[in-house]
Amino acid sequence: MKILIDMNLAPAWADYLVAEGFEAVHWVTVGDPTAPDRVLMAWAAERGFILFTHDLDFGMLLAATKSKSPSVIQMRFQDATPRAVGAEVVHVLRSRRSAIQAGALVTIDKLRDRVRILPFEKDTKDA
Image (cartoon, rainbow, N blue to C red):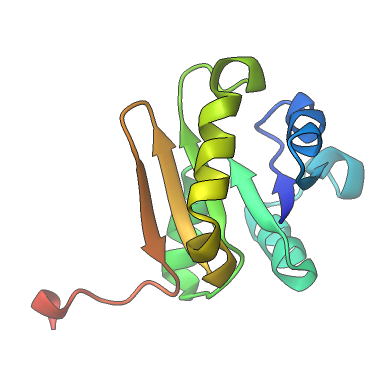
């Protein structure tokens, strides 16, 4: 699994995820640190990467564009360091692997993880 780490997460995540057996790069090493979110999403989608972030905007971008990729893993922890939540993140990456590889938005918080398969569809009750 190839993971692109967003600017809002520490570069230490790359080393942590590589040590756990993933291919991981931090955006600062491959792109413009001031690039808008859509540029990161395009880069990840074109190269088969999953986007790992602490930013909730990516879920909105996926919904607005009805994209099937890239998968986005978003954390909702106050302390978003590998030391604090690395084990939980790795557990979710492994346990939700098939959904992530198929295309999903995965949200991880203190209590649980949630998966929404891409592209987001309009709820049938709204039709």
